[in-house]
Amino acid sequence: MFMAVTLTLYNCSKEPNELAHNHSHNHTEAEHNEHNHELEAHDAESESKHTDEIVLEPHDAERFGVETEVAEVGPFNEIVSVSGQIENSTGDQVTVSAPTSGIVKLPSTVTAGAQINNGNTVATISSSGVSGGSQDMAYKAALEGAKRELDRLTPLHADGIVTTREYNAALQAYETAKASYSSAAASGRVVAPISGIITSLSVVSGDFVNVGQPIATISKNAKLTLRADLPEKYYKYMPSFGSANFRTVYMDEWIDLVDLNGSRVSDAKNLSAKQNGYIPIYYTFDNDGAITPGSFVEVRLQGAPRENILTVPSSSLSEQQGQLFVYVKVDDHGYEKKAVRVGADNGKRVEILSGLKPGETVVSKGVTILKLAETSGNVPEGHSHNH
Image 1 (cartoon, one colour):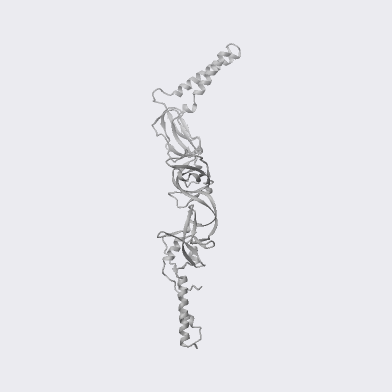
Image 2: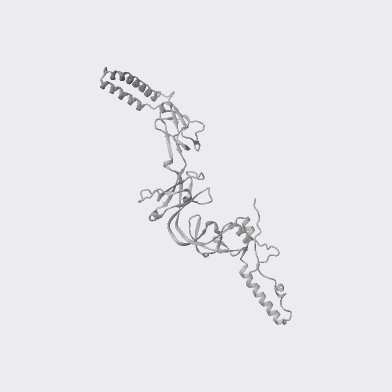
């Protein structure tokens, strides 16, 4: 629901008759006319001072979420704006492969994006109906035969009836058959080694797979990686980039990697990693569930710090006809619009180069309400705004 807000510019002039009422009536007509001219001059001056003041009652400001903060100088980093992408962290994902050759069958619950727990079945592989039969069955038969022969020779070797050479040959055959046979392969069951999200499937039910062929990729999704693609021309600044802010195409707010325990994980010293004129810089961070791997992002890399920089929240800025403005609170009811020139912008805060002084109180949230108030022409009855 849209609520119309009637917020106005107030005229601070006073009625000359009201002000003149308390003066003595013994003045001469000339003195009286001279006094009226002085009052008119005062009114003109007062009007010129306050015509551009935007008045917003405190209860309206609170009602519509208008917040302010005092503009102060402090440290602020050099900023380089680049593009990038969110990727799964390599240490947080595994690929499960076929333990045997055969025809794949996927459970109905196994789909890309589905949650799976450690030990759950990812797929079953059957060699039934496949030409040549199951190799694992042959391995199993060889293992069972070698086990029986070893069991037969063991007591005979203890009694000295068979030689050590014969016993060792039987033992070696058993160990070889044991290494060749896998109970998991024989069962044809592919299980998840970790709990997480199935991020991709390499096969569909009915496909034939060979031993070692990838079946699915599972990600814990506890950690994600931000890849920032730095243009090659900024190579010399690479060592200075500590943290970064980023946002996806489906987000309005910027995210500070510090808030997600983010840290840089690469420190390239040469250009060998560059691709198409860009050098990748990687950061890893905790996944809070709001970010999807594969998302393309805007990135603000934070470089060397600078001191005594005047900044305001990015939400303080209002753009009108190509010019940027901020709204400064001048008293409990009044606000003034000021044109500003900006510098570096990290997504959350922006550097102010001119138009604003340290110590002034700027609107940090609710700028839209002030824009509405600025364009309103209604003056409430009986309002007095004396200075």
